[in-house]
Length: 67
Image (cartoon, rainbow, N blue to C red; front, side, top):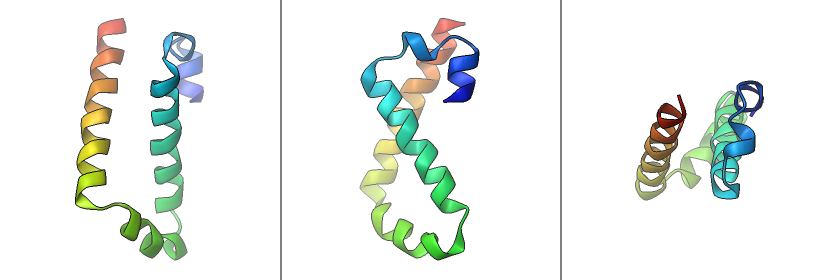
């Protein structure tokens, strides 16, 4: 989020893009702690992971288009 804010992209993002960025940021934080990995692995099914990858690619392309 700070990076998006720092480079001026945050203000241009849709609410959905901001929510998605918040979601994947939270997954990153949770994955750092061993006690959370088991619970995280139950949430991250193949379908959820595919969706996260697809949405990440869309956001990545949107960012590239902005630059």
